[in-house]
Image 1 (cartoon, one colour):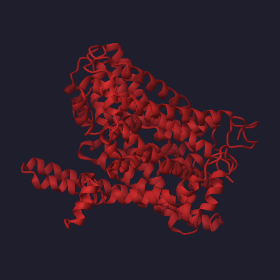
Image 2: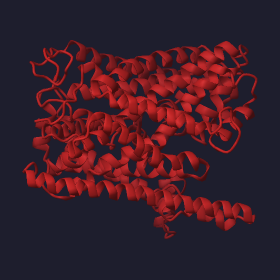
Image 3: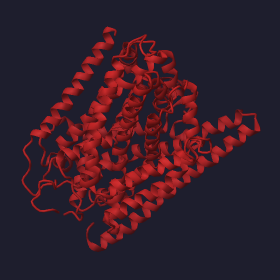
Image 4: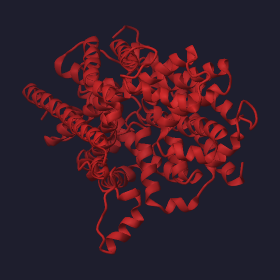
Length: 555
Length: 47
């Protein structure tokens, strides 16, 4: 029984929307950087093993939870999970499936708006004639709000435009909005990615200012360092990358799948959408940014830039490199690159809106238009601090708590619920109902035992990350009686604000100390805001729970 | 390119491309389920 008029138009549309949900900035910016930092070509081994042991089982679990919940009339995770087991805890665990989407969309839509701004700047030729330092400075000025850019308060303007586009598409419903955009956006993204990949792998030293052939970049990325696969750090990096790239632990896959009927396939759909994301990441994502960057900057410089993350390469370096190809080609390449990132971004942010809309529709009987507007307003309010205080670390704080921590917690709980409380027997039946492929029984074993345990290990790894992510040294230190030194990026280190406190302790300039203390204040305030959002959703869920009990919809 | 890098690249890219194509073709060639199904574009009447 479903209580909504929403439906997918076609099966291909659903798969493209699911693939679009998974394909995001990380496919083009995070994956290549992770690969070069974790064993080059050998990274693909732990990466694909993680995909098979963690990624695919979780995809099956999330699609199943979604379809099962949808058949009970629920389109967001709190009551999907509650309908699978009567313990009251599950509806509060399910809150993560709304909270993460709001939290991630709040900073993700801001990033998405950068791509719109950079398409605009590519078209009007802003980057032409700029040196590398000026391109970096343009980005720094852009995110500083008060610095002069072409349009006053430019980041806010583009953020509002981006939100407006998202709200408009979401208000058109699943088949009329989200699916239509996926059917246009995903193929365009593939074409743009292919054109850029062809340009990147045909780069020749000495032409258009390049100092290296593309093969130097490809060697850098693909030369295997097989020793690296004995390092736990590389396995954590691979598992995390699989997690982020497939949009697992968010609640958006469940929301999309909740509009399927019981007899319709989820097994083949999940496989197809999952592998489509892998194609974009491994085949296209690996072929663009690194070969071009190494072609112009050399291996040493790219290694240094990669240490600062993929965003730096994508927004601070690539526009300068494109400008070496002459004004016309720079404009075309800029539109292709940032257009590709825009489509990757918007197909993901639309997926983040869907569980929020599903919850408001189910529980408050709001119309699609009203829920879309509500989502836009929520993101505007929660997201504005990431725009205004980007340089003070609010953006990173949102990313950590909603884009990492919440995902690991939620995925670990849902895997445990599905395998151990709902029961693997019922769960396996659910996966295979209506299946157009025969799912190997290996997955039954993985879902029942391996995936929940692996997720708990990965989560504990995030909580106790040792200094420098060097697990071997950390265990040696522990056995030598030196204790456990937490990395600043570990959950414990983050909670204690160790990184900031260390910087404050060594700073001597009063202005720097004041700035760091202001940063610390904003960090704590942003956590408080996120906690308030979580508690607010939990209260709404609680209220809805008692109504459902009264109506007899939940046992 | 060096041999190790070339082998890794070719094996990975061809395997991922082939598996992606295999599952997508399977989706396109699977027999549609009997109505009413989850998809509204093949409905006789709008939902």
